[in-house]
Structure formats: structure tokens, C-alpha cells
Image (cartoon, rainbow, N blue to C red; front, side, top):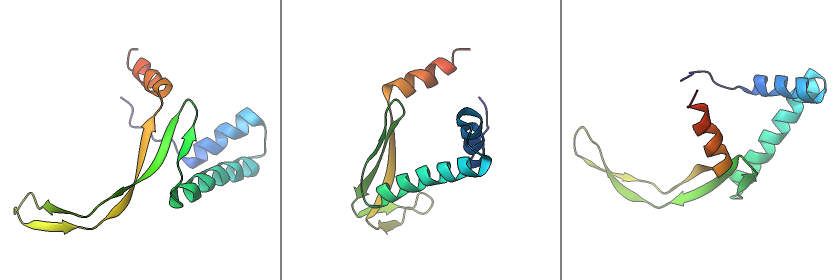
Length: 100
């Protein structure tokens, strides 16, 4: 399995090639989309991208955790966490990529 990571710059380059905008416009477009998504998530909205998946924010309540090394109990503060649930289409695409 590949250890490669897709970066913002590579996304911008892909938009540049596919859409024909300038490199700067492509970079601005990618930044704008990512900013829009993160703003919506910060406000607690769900971001659903058809055929890709759903990003949502979940609230986790306070609980008592345990340090695995010492066994000492530690309070864990309530927090909000980001979750991603891939669509069934994305799951199938990823699975079929494993069968080369």
C-alpha cells in the first residue's frame, strides 16, 4: 500500500489541469472550498459530499480515563470531535483498489 499523501498543492494542480483556471485561481478555489467546509463544521453543521462521504462534529461527554502505563485514573474533559463516514460508493472504490 502506498504511503503517499495528497496535498492542497496537488489538489490545486488537479483543478488547474481539469478546469483550465490559472494556477492561482485553482489554488484560491481549493482554499475557498476547504475554508467553507471547515467553517460549516466549526458551526456544528454536517458536510455531505455526494459519492464521497459525510463529515460531522460529535460531542463527547466527560469521562474517566486510565493511564495504561500506571493505571492511574485521569479525568477526560468534554470535547467535540470530527468524524468522517465514507459513502458506500467510496467504500467500494477503495475496496476495489485493493484487488489489483
